Length: 318
Ligand SMILES: [Zn+2]
Image (cartoon, rainbow, N blue to C red; front, side, top):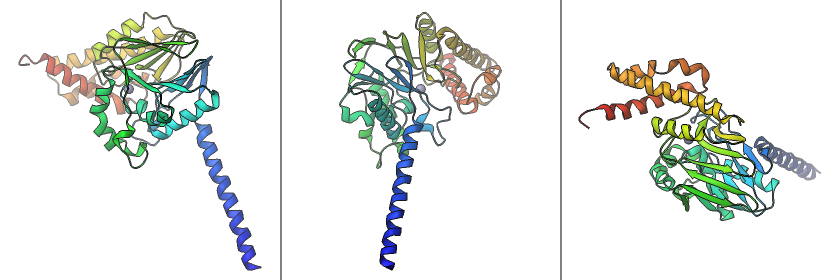
């Protein structure tokens, strides 16, 4: 009798544990939402978090575009688990296979989920300089973001592009063409945009930040010239690398342009008056602070990077 009671208790426990496990899975799945911003164009909007807090693997806007023949994924998130959540979201929306995984640039929050798509055997597509940039970042990713990879972390989980874009490339998804454009140095040295002609939807990667302060990892002046060119484009909607969807690309770009100009002008003025980097960090572009999120984790680094670049350029011994 007592043994039977134990069996019943064990069975009840197993059922409860099972239910809880299923509940957790369902929660994780439900938490990963995608929004269909145009027919066949799905975006998962990233969270406004810094890169060193829990949840940092889910801060970029990522998503996918569905054609009659196959799917193109655009960026894969900052961990193998975010990549898998995106893959599961695709499977819920369509039965056509994933044929392309496009990375808009090298940053960890956009590429670490690539591994989740390996079973689909897609072409991995990126800027002609992306493979080299990933190679340069490899040790840093493995050291700093080991917890975002499958355990044990290994270099073979970092998947670089096999299909480089030198300037432009068209991808055919079946009754739907994507136009990819590789840009000169701007946010990084390997920025790529994706335009879905059918819906007029532009994916800028991190060439456009909204709400969240733009992070400079390339060239501020280069970025300004790319902004100038993108501002001429006539698109219906834009998916930025971070922040909300917009129907007004020009206005979104001009907010970013204003910050970058203040950054450049401010650093130049500080260098001319012989200020230290620390002084520059305290004083440059401070009027912009109320306009942006995550100022403290991003702005000092932007100033420091630009200060070093401009100091080096202005040194007559170079
Ligand atoms: Zn980035």
